[in-house]
Length: 500
Image (cartoon, rainbow, N blue to C red; front, side, top):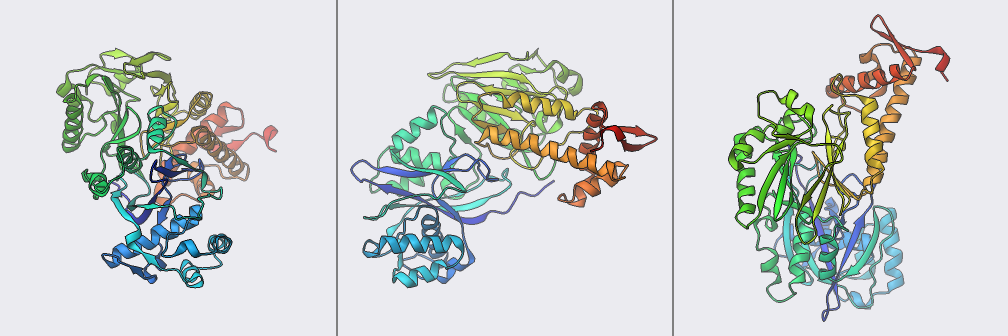
């Protein structure tokens, strides 16, 4: 079983302005980023080893001092705003130039503070919680959040790159945008915005830290879109993944997609979570499955027995799960599953074979979010393993969902992602590049699958080569159907008429 990634220290700043009608400054992360692409967040980033070299006034501990430095430095790098004592007297043009020098790597943050004669003071920040990224993510952070006010005569401005947009917005409007499905928010960002929308007063820190997750407890309830809950469960899945995402969609009535874990403790935790929803008056309607693989259906029988609700899946799924549990009814391609609410959820089932013959995705039409199962995941790559896996079908399925008005991807492994069309195209381009390199390796005389893997998968650890061999086989089967290669006595050969 793969061990979850160890969290790295990080800090994030909730920048505020206009005390009579407070606004927050949030940023949108680029679609191309590996961690949380296309997600709205607060400025921040990972702690640097040099952060411990800078003195901080009024810090409660050396650790707290380092995290304040991290917060100030990251805010300055990403927005140009510098929080320091007497910073209102600093020359704005000089600060802008020093920011550029810092971003270029020409100066250290410590030298910038020395050049301006400014000092850092922890009392200028209000603690806003400490959140740890859940174990299901490929990159994890132990993030300290701070509130602070925009100094006079400073302006927040991002430089496009890792961030594509920054804007001031009232917390109430930010919450409304999230409820309408216009933005993706990670749990700490959502909790902080909800809390600020209730007002900023002397007990703000206590309210921000009123839930266990804000003081370092593991986050299990993840709601990056309104009414679309993610509950990651530990499963015996393929590395680098350690968990499979179970989704609960809807409120008055909800469906449960892929209760995946075969482990009794995880099944109990999922059942307790669903029971907590039922206790608020919500009602579970049915269990839906994306496909039959064990790391997606391991908890179906237990949850079906606990809730006494039907299980629905593709017609092929019943043959594949055998006697593990009964499929009560099938899900038809393009079927609409309507879940009631002030703003109803419309899940459209979309048949997407390739990873598995029975694979289904669920497209939420109002928000544009796709519950993508193992078609597209938030970490690692998707294994296409013949005969169950079929590369031609897989590429066709990617193209099929790429034609939808997508905004976000809720994959079976890893965190949900914005920038959906970018990710779909990235998946297609990656597979086509692999295919091109596989064909070139055959043309060069590599005729067996292990030889081709060693020639093509130079970016993959050797311990993963057996899995890579399955994907290479899938590509070669497609190339054979395409008339690009032939198989003769266990060896592959490029067809000379098509060699470029």
